[in-house]
Length: 234
Image (tube, rainbow, N blue to C red; front, side):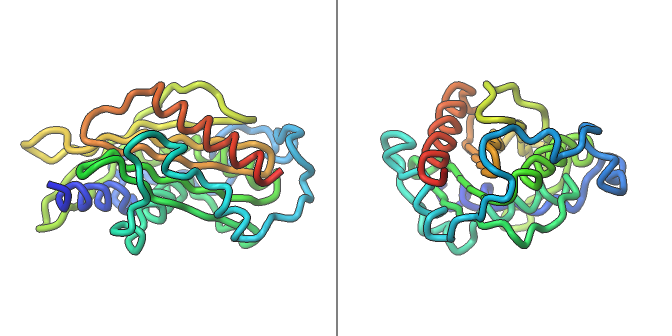
């Protein structure tokens, strides 16, 4: 069962290259609010702030104990990091450009033999670029409401992205609910993906499990992640 779940997690976080909705709209001006990204950035830190080093960003990640009882880091997934796949999927759907100045760190956590799984990614960049990324992330559902995935053994599944209502954290919050279904077998995995920005700091936290996650649990995790990151990286 644990092996199957790991494959589901990796499958769910595969790059969304097979969207069934219309192709993404071209050009950066086609997505999200029309307000200039630099103008929409609140005053949570100077825009010219130099990003901290990789070790400092890594130290700002949550510890398993800070997530809750039963969590541990997951070395089995470290080499096939779901954070890479999940972030790539979101950024592909958001048509986000690469940010060479950004510094990022991630961690994968597991709460039991069959989950839940939590992936946290912290990215530190310039405030205007962080704000622009959040605007682009608002186009994810529009550009990739559904995409295809595959589990081990060639089992096909379909992932649907829907809006998720959560309490705002930091300066800006974008949240989605993902549901992975296997044709003829029903839902196989659920996920909450929440991205929160605080100044030049962007925290992405995903909670994945085999039953629908509790929104309040997700909110507490995101709040804890952003609070710690701000304290460590201010």
